[in-house]
Image 1: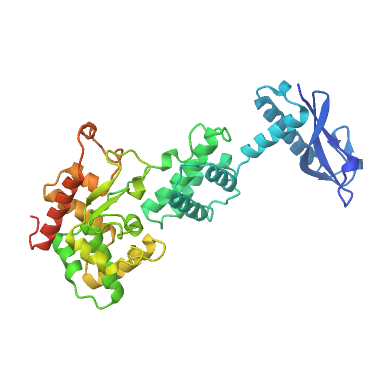
Image 2: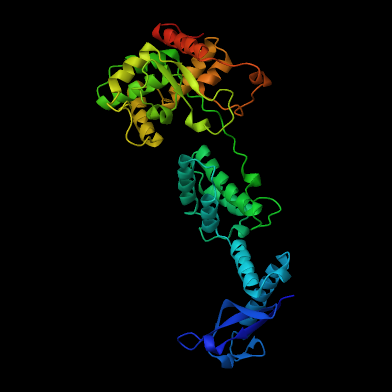
Length: 394
C-alpha cells in the first residue's frame, strides 16, 4: 500500500533559494513526488515534516494536511494500486485530481472535444451560449462547486434574455454538469440545474391570416431589399414552409420542377420519411428563376445564412406593412395553419414540414402509413390555389 509523507528537497530549490513543499509517495520500492503550491523561504523553516519558525506556520501546516488527505483520498479511489508502478500511480492520481478540479471552461472544452454527434451549427450555438454564460459565472468556477443557488442567480441576472435563449443557456450548464457526472468528475446527488429547467415555453403563434399573406405578396415596396425579403417570405410559403438553411443549400440547376431534400434540423432524428419531396408550384418557380445565380443557388441570401440578419429585415417590414408578428418563421407557421384549416391531413403537413418522428405526440399509425410525394404536391397546390383567391377562414 502506498505511503505518503511531506518533505522538502534542498536540491530542488527555486532560483531565489526558496523551496516548494512536496508530497512523497512511496510505492513498490519507488518514491516519487507531487509538488504543492506551499513555498518556504529556506530548509531552516522545515523540521520533522512540518513548517516552523514562521508566523503563518499553523495555517500552512493545515493546508498541507488537507493536500495530503486529498492525495490519500485519490489513492483510495484507485481500484488496484498494487498493480501500478509508482510513476503510474502518480500519473493516475494526478489526472483524477485534475478531473475533480474541472472548471467550467476545462469541462466544456473537453466535452466539446469528444462530442462526435454534435452538428457544426449546433457546436457553434453551444460555444456562443457558453461565451455568454461565463460573462456572469466565471469560467474558472469549479463544476463541483456549482449549486442551485448559483444557477438561480444566473437566471435572475439574465432576465433580459428571451426565454428560449435563457433555456439554451441552462441546457448548456446542464450538459456540462451531466458530462462531469457521467465521467465521475463530480458526485452531485441532484444536478444544480434540475429544479431550474422548468421554463414555461409558449408555442409561437405568429402565423398570419390569408389576407396578411396576400398583403405581403401584393404590397408596392419602395426599397429593393424589401422586395428581396418579400420574395424570400413567399418562396418559403410556396415551398411548404421550408427552413431558410435548407433553401439556401438548394441547387436549382438540377431540377426546377421538383424538390427533394433532407431537412437539416432533423437530419439525425428518426423519421418516417427521410426526404421531403414534392413538385415545385409555378408560383415558386417564378421567384426561383428571378433570383437563381449561375451556380444554381438563390441570391436571396448572404454567403452564410444568418437568422439574426434576416430577422432584422423583417422587423423593418413590420412597420411598413403594419403586421406586428411578421417574421420569416411566420411563412412556415402560416403554411401549416392554412393547410390544416383547409382540411389537409396532419400526417401530410408533418411530411411537408420535415418533422421528426419523436417531435410532439406521434401516434403509432405512422408505423403503418406512408405519405407520398404526390400527396404533398397536391396539398401544396391546394394551399397555393387558396391564397391565390380572395377567400378567408371563418
